[in-house]
Length: 395
Ligand code: PLP
Image 1 (spheres, rainbow, N blue to C red):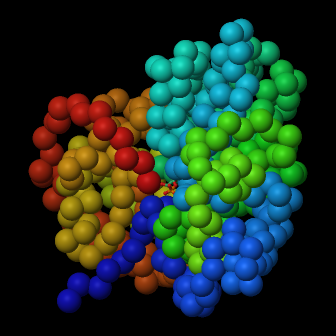
Image 2 (image 1 turned 180 degrees about the vertical axis):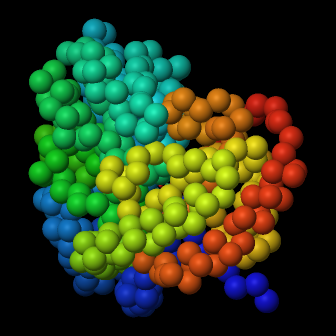
């Protein structure tokens, strides 16, 4: 039997035992938190305790936590919700980066195509970092909302959120940030950061898939995307998923409590992995080296190889990895992130993302390095230029 080496924590990380236990326990309890009877009130108590715990761990006030079904929904709510609340005949600007997750990128492009949003996707440098001069030039009083991610899901680059907030504040424009990959890996303090809205997702932290939150300042106008029973400040209707919320709070508490020591441990493993990967000819690091990237993220481009062939060879050798970019029907799409960083079409299809998390160990690094040279050889032998396709599924 092939033992699996899991190096795809940025796609999803295993459920933490504490979170799974909290989930199971909450499942035993019947009650809709919106019901007024005793069972409903008990369910409501669990939700509000979890909300307080989540708010405390992210530097927010409990009333600022809006539960959603995950990061994608929170991104959609933030971008579309703020834009619709603020857009006027003369204020139609929407400013974002060229390396956003599809949950933001597709939302802003949809608003540009269907609601006459005046979209600017600001470029990045070759390490994937926002061009601050171009950003400052793009943000004006005619901008309705800015959305710039805290950390990139493909190459792990941290964005200069402090400066983004400074520029936007001067122009009086609210800022949303997608912090799905950042929370649990780098310090994230909602109030301290000065952003107006922030996206977080449970399954990247060890909670079940399908729960997340948008942190949003109370005074921020937010037009609902989901209409219905008026739960969650009337901004996000839908019966509140008590067990998932309970598990989310437990997973986040564990991730945040262990963050500092885990960041050091994972950065050590990542750097060992990088040293081993670099021993293979014509393999290049994407994104910044050391500081400036997520501790658990390593991303490389493998010259003369397609990501799908490489991922297939690694999978056959028992290693679960990713390119970090879109995949459709088993075919890797060129990465819009690598393209924004200056990669040509071939290079934008050659990405290999290796991401570490709370279950990662030295054994994983050794197992990868034992099989990677052969996998690269196989992928290079199979290399054929491909035709373009254009569907995106970011993870
Ligand atoms: N934003 C980023 C940066 C992500 O990495 C992901 C996950 O792939 C998402 C948003 C979407 O989150 P979810 O899977 O919870 O919908």
